[in-house]
Image (cartoon, rainbow over all chains, first blue to last red; front, side, top):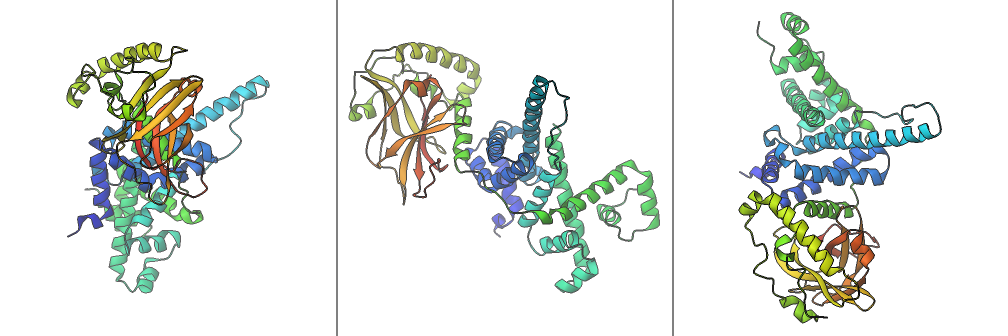
Length: 190
Length: 255
């Protein structure tokens, strides 16, 4: 049996290696997840320069804080996204201060930064990533159920799959995704 | 009554039919209703991802910045033992051949990782002292000769495979880079960089031919501003002026 065919086992091994101080594990994590981290930061901050600064900070923080990684919680992706939320919030705070200081100089009323943002982008992108990573047929079942909003009966007919199997994939899949979001929350609220 | 199973909570969250007594329990139970709400939020966030427009990888140079910053803030990796001799005078204008065999003093702080961990704080303090002493000895003006050198090591295995030295010339500083054996540039070429200790900025100092010694003019101002990490990268002929992120050897100049 090739255990490395299972992306979850591979991710857990990476997490253990990182926690043990293996620099190559950090490099591998960067190869896998820097596009996820960068895209989250880019969505949240809008400029490539700020987003790349966040990527740098996240992976440096991941190395320094490797002791806080919990390999048993599955993919380090959620852990990295949690750190990313932290850093993005820091950049936003700095921007707000700069904005407020400018406003104060101009003797204007202090207001919230003008650009509205969807605070759930980090979670949404993590779920997209997890769905891409997840093997089929579960990923397809979840996409049809949640993104295309199709009924379980419809999915069962289309995929020629027993209804019970569809329901089982939806249940397992949703619980798994829920656990990823819990991990983001745990890290981001530290 | 016991809590519903996870499967039953999912069904409730998705509006699937569930036994009436189960849903009655969830309405009463804070833990279960929070769980159902979390599952609904998960489903909602998963459903909203259709406007997703693709992944954007960061620039390759960002990885080089990450490793430079990690190297810079880790005293165990900051080449303290190898550079503790930097303050001693070397023969003026050593040729490239000399540079490869310059002995490292046995008195240099040669510590094992385990001991180094225990003495980490002392080591940091010592390196500061060394840095200050070295700084005074090194950067005094109107003196020619080798002023600073560092072993160049692979990033993953920390194998020493070359050396960089800074030599004061009549009108500035020269950075000389020599590798123990020719580096493999593949289809591309080798480029020498000075990366800032803050890990955010870097400058290209020139192209290194595999198997040859490279000497590049640099300035005192660069060193003063913190561009002290010597880095050799493998670059492709891709019209991208930035660092590829593929560093072969690296070492941080003392002080």
